[in-house]
Image (cartoon, rainbow, N blue to C red):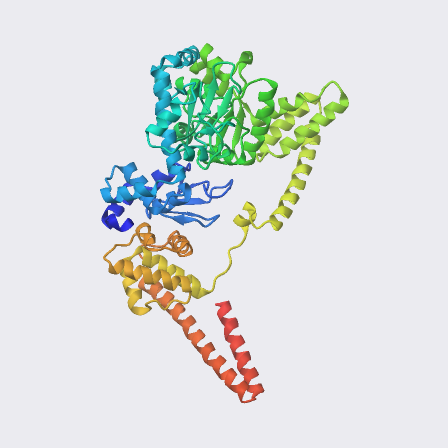
Length: 604
């Protein structure tokens, strides 16, 4: 299928989609030196080990080892095939693909997920049309108008209404050639106890739930009558996994990345009101408690999260849990308090977006400030025992703070609150931190996945010939002329099997008339281990004006290893012959000589 797209067009599509721009749609990247770094989207981490090089148009994670070009990134991140990645990037850059190729891609898209995606997209337009024009949606329109949403906001979020009927939606989908049974299987539609297929959103205002690619994958239905429950989300499916998605993330993520901040709400209406008021970095969880996956997703785009939940007991308790989780994944956490016991939507309607931003978001308290007040609710601080229990809790919280200045600040605040010596409290904090450090070290020794251990673990020392081969390949990837030189002096006579494979492909790549281009070269490779090895080698810094002496040294080291191995093979043959002749003393001497040479090889 790929062969039907001219290789030149694939190259044009790759060149038109800068890897930094594409990956920035998924990860907040910051330039450090010549490369860009961010939190890896493929494994959990608090310290950025995911590197992107604009010069070479490749990425590599030093934590999990994944790497590739712009196509392979999308294949890993989105689960795309190569064909789908090419198609997606062609659409992104405005390139036209051959009609025959598109027809084959479309025919391969008739999977359950693709059909479900098409049905959701069609239903989004259908519900929105009903909401905007149908007489039976008048109550829904009145409700939304009463909530202060403008026509522009309604259009932006494609707010809709599902007809209060068992047949209208299903008949509409049948006319569009959908198989209703398939839609039941993929949770687009539901089946009643009486075996009737129906729309579970019927009679509700419908808010489309979009994925990060702005494709509708589910719906949130809001009752406007006595229908229970008040809010109803689409059930989980392969496309719609509530614990891995965030409401309005597709629209908010660019602003989150730009500002470095995300505002987290509980409700959809809070998001609508804030967005309408010009506050664009707003998201909400999908009717469930925030998960670690969602928290990590937020962290990839924003350093700071302002939690803005309702001020009732349920909202405060939820804030506590979410704050802990966000802190765990490395976010700077702030907590907004809304005056007059209003929810965000009500405050914005009453006072406007400007005051909401200034008096709620910008006036939000720090994580520690929230914790100090939150824990007070559990105790009667007029009682000595409660004072001690409260202080122990707060000291535990203070001990978690990384900054010594922050610890000192809150130690002084607590000391002043209870008329105590800051030194005594700080001593307790230091003791807790020492215990925590010991525990962390023990955990790190037990777990090979511990981030700190991975980061601080010394690199395994490689033999000189191994390093020489890697350096030589790095220069060959960078310079076609050097590759030609090595081809005539060494050919594929490398000692490491992976390196033999890489240079064999590289020679063929250059023979086809290609210039040095790692991003283009790895498309020739179909083995993930080989691709990872190429990317790892290509990410190594090299000098652009390497001397011929340095290249000659690498060749000499590689050949020396081959000569030594050849000598060992000859000695092993002689040893076997001596054993066959029952000359065991000679065999032992040869064995000692083999051990000596092998020891020297390891020390090289």
